[in-house]
Length: 335
Image (cartoon, rainbow, N blue to C red; front, side, top):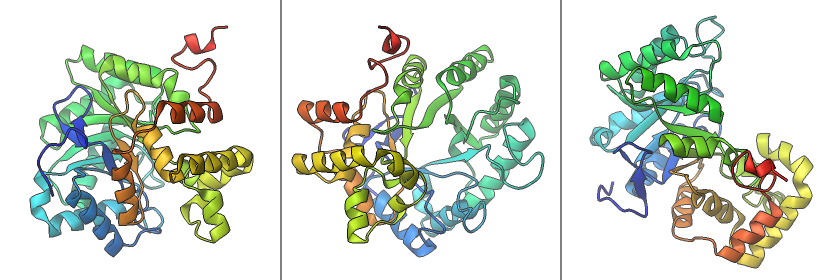
């Protein structure tokens, strides 16, 4: 792994001094879509290419069993022990891990127990970024922060992040942490891409105000923006023919047809265009990709070096317009 800092590839995680790659290796496909040997090859390729940021969740791998993906990563780290000091390892807590009443959410009990379980599966003594997978409106922030503070004090967690929060959730969490003299949330992982632009209204402004890193997930909307129509015609659609992408395609086929035609006019691959757009958005720190092959990783890294022109960005805005008048709420809604 290249440990030399490169401002094109690495940046600070929000207001912290921690440096992470601008491409984050997401592991949601490990298990079911990517077998363990291929997953290890993907992780090797990513870190050897300069990516130092690896993201997972305790419930990933559910196609095999919940916790499977953390075990795959833990086995990989055991095979390359020198990497643990170089890799910024992120996981998540909050989604149900079993049918048990207390095996989900953000109670102090579950946060602490889930962290211990993740540490065992990941074969590590600490988690660099421990993310709340979803907001839990039954858990008060004093309870959440009490648990997180304990894990930080014990050296088991370095930083705390959030995922799938609204802007006001981020503000509430941060104000509660501030009252406790705790660092609080340093990153927010959100769904953000050309087809989903609502984070621009309140989440991105809140993140900027509090110095919170923004980590978009599903930058290609499950493959919808990766050239799904061309791949389907060629019989190459895999992920893009399923789930989020297939559902969205039913209502957006005309727009996606124009998108793929527009990308052809640009002389660019649709997946590259979608990635470049997200990576270049103001406030975005690192983009979480879910690759299935080393080629997908290479494509994401290339996207960092291939910015869109002003004209290309304008044409994409015409096709995928921002909400309302664009910009932040409430100005986006003013007439």
